[in-house]
Length: 79
Image 1 (cartoon, helix red, strand yellow):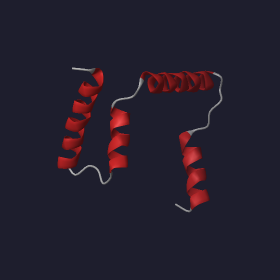
Image 2 (image 1 turned 135 degrees about the horizontal axis):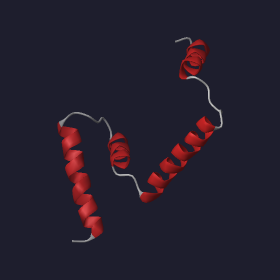
Image 3 (image 1 turned 60 degrees about the horizontal axis):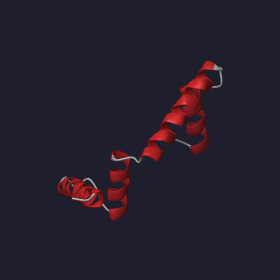
């Protein structure tokens, strides 16, 4: 079988499981879940680069405590 055929068969199985479980409400949502579960090599490289940058920021003291940021967001959006 070709790679495309194998990927399509995998997507169909994934879609069937999600639809049976009532986990999705649209085709767009289903595709987004598929992409999250099956990232491309470029997607993975982007995530790894962002993690490395975040770690460098922490080491360099460039961060704000999460409770400070969430309090600011709550105040801004009236949550």
